[in-house]
Each structure stands twice: as structure tokens, then as C-alpha cells.
Length: 300
Image 1 (cartoon, one colour):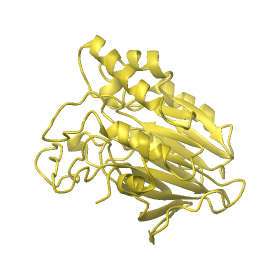
Image 2 (spheres, one colour; image 1 turned 180 degrees about the vertical axis):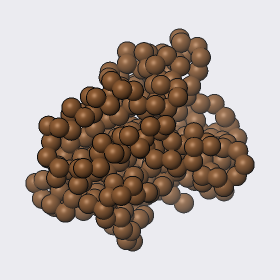
Image 3 (spheres, helix red, strand yellow; image 1 turned 45 degrees about the vertical axis):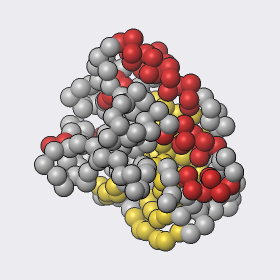
């Protein structure tokens, strides 16, 4: 893939959302994120809702190729990210346990083609709700965990392995114990699949006890949440906590409540890959902000 192909595939324009310490502002951006402006600053890439194994030509006739195109696009970024996160629904749901394992293996094989080898995975309800995440854990490890990078504390939450979309008491106690080890001013990024607020419960776009999680996070001054599940860009504030939803890499979904039923948006042959994409998240630690650059799978 040459430079021209990459620009068409990934794009470098878009809108920047900076969030942190209650800030949520947008500004035009033409040349992408400036990376590496200080030793503390860094950036990562978020991909979400790849739904490997989905089959629906009316929704995405390139279902077997979109994830591979996204991997190629990330590999061709001029500056490689410090790490990559996949925020759930790695595979499309199936009740056949063997098929589920095959899809997990297929997804993992494609993701192994990423140049950046530090990749953090997270389950979505398509991956984990049928068996409480047992098969997912065979391939990708724990359902919830933490990691730290250049002064930022990352918390990966599981709000999908319980089909009722509840974060269990054991995980809540684990979260409280983890946060007690950090100062109120510590920069915290929460990675989750479902939204932690009631975006649109009628469409299952919620976490049943999400308010319990946000209450636990509220004493911390710099918390930002990145999630997936809704297959579209969305930005929301809960007090000073900013929530940013990512696009899908398989099919877009309509805006919350905009149509009677939640169904995938059909493929637009005149605008292939419309509504699909991934994002760069550039951090400015001293400013306690996260600059988000949305990247389409294919730029017209």
C-alpha cells in the first residue's frame, strides 16, 4: 500500500475532541495529531466492534476485508502508536462453541499482523455473554484488568459477560481497591464496551449499574471513558467525566432513538465504508487532555 492508498483508506482530517478535567471542546483539524511533543505525551489507537464472523452483504459486502484494511491502515500510520486497544465485540455472536473459537482464532490471527505488538483486548457482549466469557478468556485473558502508561492509569472494565449488563460485586470491590492506590489527581482512562450512562436503554445502550461505577470514579479529577457498542461516534459528559464512543469496523448503527428499531445501517455503494472507522487518541499529560482524531476506513 503506497502513501496515496493509505490517505484514501485512513484519512488524516477530522475533528479533535479534547477532554479532561471537565473540558469537552471541538476544533477543526487538518494535519492530524502532533505526536511526541514531550517525553510524557503519547498516543494510542482505539478500534472497536470488529464483529469478525459477521455475514450480511446488504450491510457490509466486504465483511471479510474491513478488519484487514483497518490493520493495514494502522500499520501505515506515519508515527506508530504506543499501543492499541480493541474495545469489544471482537467477533460476531454465535451459539456454536466451536464456531466461536474459530472466530476468536481468526480475529487473533488478523490482529497479530499489527506492527505494534502492545495490544490490549476487551470483550463485548458478542464475545462473552453466552458463556460468561469462558472462551474469550482462553484466547485473550482476563475480562477486567489495569495497566499503566507514562503516568496514566488505564482500567479495563467488564460490563458484558453478565447478560443483564451488570458489573458484579466482585469487580466493583476490585475497582474500589485499585482506585484506593491512586491519588485523586491521577489521570485515569476507563476502557469499557457498553456506555456507563443511560444513553438509550431501550436499545440496550446502557450498563444497568453504570451509575455505581461513575460514582466510584467521581472523586478522581481526571477521568475519561472510551467505549464501543453503539457503532458510532458519540460524546457525553457525566459531571467532569467525559465519555467517547467509537465507530465500528463492521457496520454503523442509527443514532439513538432516531428510528423505531435498532438495525444496522445498510451499505451505501456510493460511499463505501461510510460510518466505519477507528481513532487516534493523543494525550497531553501536562494539560490532562485527550485529543481524538477520527479516521474513516475509506476516505472518498
